[in-house]
Image (cartoon, helix red, strand yellow):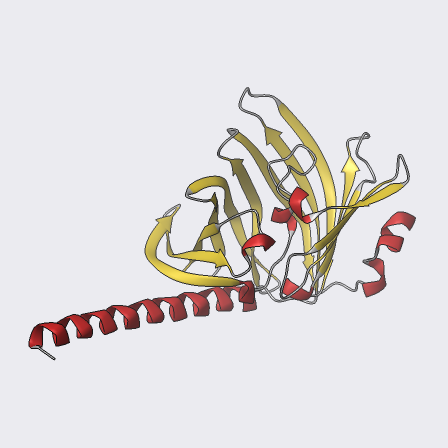
Length: 255
């Protein structure tokens, strides 16, 4: 082998090693971020304010309860106002290796329906969150690449690309995630369809609650529609006593 060929080979091996190291580092960062948010359960009250591109606003309130963590959790979102959606509930059963199962209960017509995978990209009750955005996925469902470092709102962050291992399990082809270096809290997520960013989720008002760095405010922007939804969290509690049997379709029908 000539010196030129050996040089090219060494450069190729070095580049491959750098890519593997970046991937390993990215995975470790996301894994640590997930570990720092572990809790047996969670409860909060949410205020949603939606603003469309023409300035029209709407407001909804919901309660959120979760039992379990990440890819093995179950959650129930139930609207408390306004009157036309009061009592409507969404049950989300997350899985460690695939997309969640979701059911919606509408008490006014006493009917439930399963949210099909192909419908997860639709807007959730006029907000800029899609049904998929309400899932809680496990770190193992993605491949990660460290893209570098970048400040968000003046705070140093790691910038990481994540790509679903199972392409059909997500409406998004990739996401770019910014994780704060000081406390491993999420600062921003840009979600892409092919090479076009479609949604941006910004986290703010981050506080340490019961040892977990928690964003008390999240703003989801639909970059194609030009609309925005602000979610403010109140009365946030972790490790509250919740029963697993409360997170079934039969249970949300009774409440």
